[in-house]
Length: 340
Image (tube, rainbow, N blue to C red; front, side):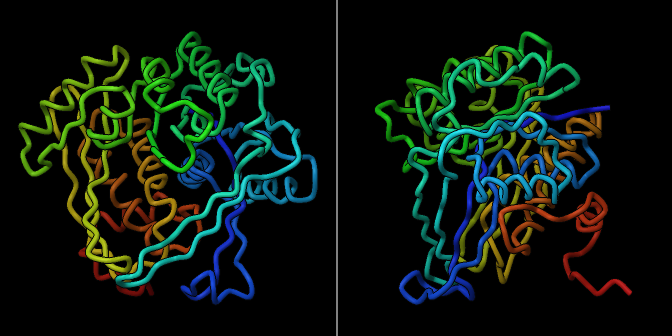
C-alpha cells in the first residue's frame, strides 16, 4: 500500500469570472490550490493515501486553505500554522488569441518564512513510500529551499521514492539566487523528473539545448544524458503541448525509462475551460501509473496524458476526475458522448 507525501504552498487564486479582463472585474472567483497540493488531490481521487505538508497562517484565511485539504481527503496532520499571510495569485483567464495573465502576490507568505527544523521529516515519512516536491518551493526563499533539501535528504535516507516537477517560474526567483545555484544539489536525489529537456538543462546550469522533439533518437539521446548527470534518476516524463491559441490546445505525453521512449496519443482540446493545474494533473497521473501499473509503462503514460487532457475541461486548480474517468477517456474515441 502506497502513501505519497507532497510538500509545497497552498495559494489563494483570484480570477475574474466569465473570461473577463482584470480591468472589467468587480468580483473574483476564489479557489485554493498549488502545484504539490494539486498532485496530492489527484492521487487521493485515484485512491492513493496522501499527506500534504505546508505552512499556513493561523487566521481565518489559513483555515480556508486547510478546509481545501479536507475537501479532497488529503492528509493534513503535519501542516504547521505560522506567519501572517497566505500566498495569492491573480489570473486573468485568456480566450482565443488573448493569452492568460498571472500576477503573483506571494512575498512574505507563511511558507517562505519556514526554517530548518520546523518539520519533523523522520516522523512525517515514517509510513510513506514516496515524496514529491517541485521547483516552485525552492524559488520562494533561501530558507524554503533549505527546508526542501532537508526533506529530500531525509526521504532519500529512509528509502522513499522521490519525484520532482521542475515547474520553472521566472517571476518567483527573486531572492538573489538563480535556479542553477540551488536546484542541482536537490535534483541529485530525484528518481522521477517531470520537465522538458531545455528547462532541465537550464536548472542544472548546463548549456542550453533546443531539441527537435519529433526526432525520437535525438530525444532519447538527451534523456540518456540527463540520467547520466543525475545518479538517482531513472524515469523522465514530459508533456507535449501545441498551443493553437488560448482556447485550443493539442496535448501529448512522453515517458522515458531504461533507454526506451513511450509516447501517448495526442488529445485535441477545444474549447478549453482552464489550463491551470494541467501539468499537476499529468504529474498525479504519472505517479499513479508508476505506483500501480508496474512495468506497463505505455499504460502509465496513457493514463498521465489522459488525466492532463481531462483537466483542461475542469475549472479550478485541482483535477477532480476519478481513475475510472481517466480510463474511460483512454478507451474512448474522444467524442465524450453522454453516459446514460
